[in-house]
Length: 262
Image 1 (cartoon, rainbow, N blue to C red):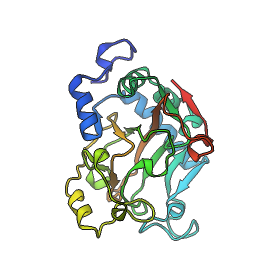
Image 2: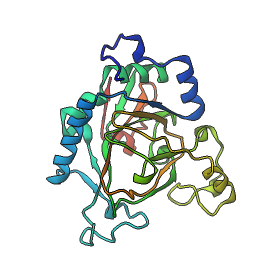
Image 3: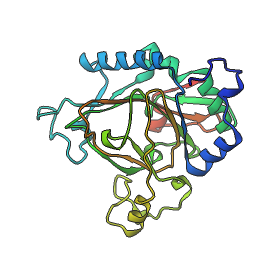
Image 4: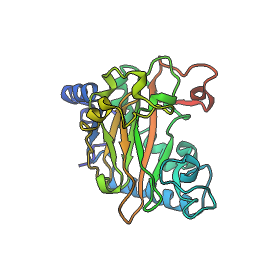
């Protein structure tokens, strides 16, 4: 059941058990948080912008992960990995990013007013059959520059997400684990040949999501995703938030695109 939209409604806030779960596991699932009609509105815009190739778009060929098309001109080269600048694209995404219930929850978690980063995530992630590549185990903070490494990503499923179509996988509690430099490769992915990493991989879980489900996860939490082996595109809206006392470092990429106080 979708929660009421009043920012003062108590059900829009997390319980003590939910707070403990987020801080312990590093992620929290909010089932049915977004109304079906709102998801449909965002999905319609997503499909339209993909069809018209409305920039800015990041293509699988540009990311260059294993199995991606070799170039934009190769077969599947124009497969979109994400529609960037979601906040700037359409009011449907802005309305969700600033949803009063979501802001109240983020304020709880940060214990201060949240701020939306326009430099990171701020996108619609798409994963297509055939050319939608897998993503190795990584944590988002690897390329973010803030006073403290404490940000929260908010992932909204616009349709079903499961192991078969490339849903997110998490290693619970990994945001609190010490990681040695030799466990990481040059791009800060966990190296699969390292024995300690192989043990961590066995701890991975894949929450199955339905349309309208939301996952909050910490910027230091290790996560990954398989390729899409279904016959349909998967789409998710993703925004990143930080507390107002945790600004991006001056001159960094994190500070370059601006932010939105909520």
